[in-house]
Length: 229
Image (cartoon, rainbow, N blue to C red; front, top):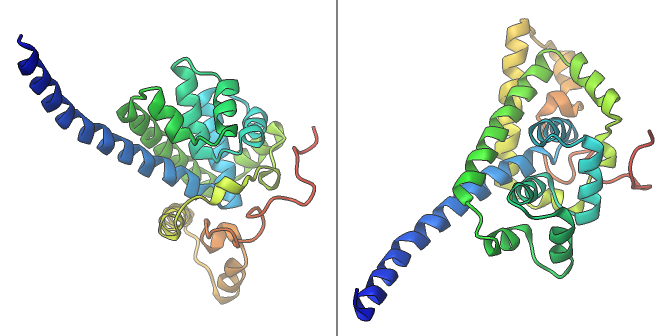
């Protein structure tokens, strides 16, 4: 192939490929932001933490440690672990974060397969919703799991947990309410007036993710750190 022809073909291939990569990255970000938004609420964070732990095969205690080490929210932490599965290390990722890079820049430099990450994040979101529904249907096994894992969402908060838009939080809230109501319908529950008033004060029954000022679990505890064993 002549040099000029080769150059033209290369330019055409790049012109087609770059928009595809950008589209895959946007789809991945959309799925990742769904994870982040759900975890802005303490109950949502319980489910997100547990689901990611199961998906990655990493203990919840270790996830909390990694979040405190890197400052990553759960969505970005999930991306980081996708990079780790491709050969990166958490130490190397943490070092790059310290010099000002974000996980998306790190992933781009590693020529990440955004389509694969998008698919993995979508699968995770489906499992998060499944666990939400199951928790609302029968909470005791999930409370037992929290106890066994020594997990407390009030000790699992970083600043980046709120790096989502109000619209994304509202979408997470709608998802939360949908599965809560579906579980209530299955149990045949109907709230009377007194229960409705109580529900407005209960973050589990009042609607889930509501942003930084949502109440318990929305701000880090004064002491910080990990919960005791």
